[in-house]
Picture 1 (tube, rainbow, N blue to C red):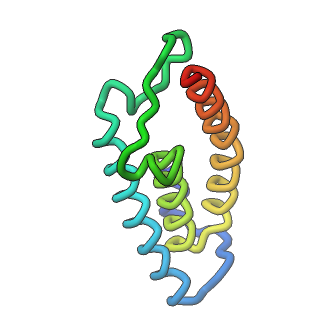
Picture 2 (cartoon, rainbow, N blue to C red):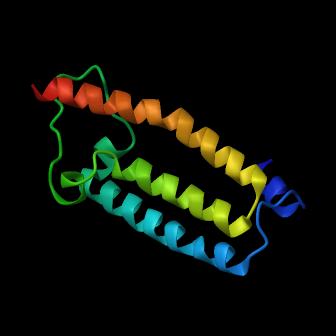
Length: 118
């Protein structure tokens, strides 16, 4: 369904080439940030945080020294970049909804990791 909606005509929020092609910057930045964060955590911890395991070590090196959730931020940047690139109101709504739904999860993960840290 998502791919179908990408190929059909729908309402655009802008018709400026500068805005459209500036979307490539957050797409690339988000992909680099997410990949970098994924490589630091490794495959064991990147897919999920297990809230039932006690004393999960908190990573504080590299990008995690500055950002608590670089994988989420990278994904959000990529979504925002796709929204700018497609100039689609549909993608804008999906991006805002996704960020609003994922922000509480990021907050919950931070809280659980802080709890396990002490």
